[in-house]
Length: 133
Image (cartoon, rainbow, N blue to C red):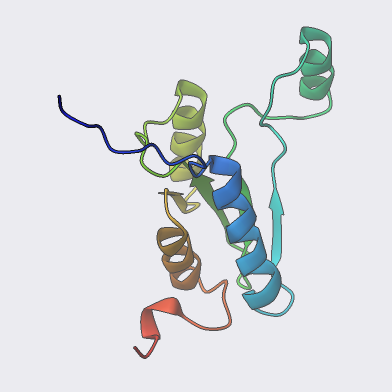
């Protein structure tokens, strides 16, 4: 009988990745960087969802919004590591809206990917691509 590998009891969830990226921004963002997380995740009652839409919630918006010093808005979508990074239809629509407006939009499924993207956008004090091993 073939033994299966033991399952990791604590798989990395998307919110774990987002918490790590938020910590990176808190401690390594360039001075005066504007950034915030969209609170679109989670299940809501239809009544609450309708209220939030009336208040301006945009379905499909990226997890993190960053405004770099030249005033350019950048958007980072985070996906659960090891899972397909397939975007939902509303997320694809938002990505296309970003493209039409010339706003960078990237998807990361690991901390290292997110760090590299933020570094390329100029959002971090230390460019992770220039690290010395």
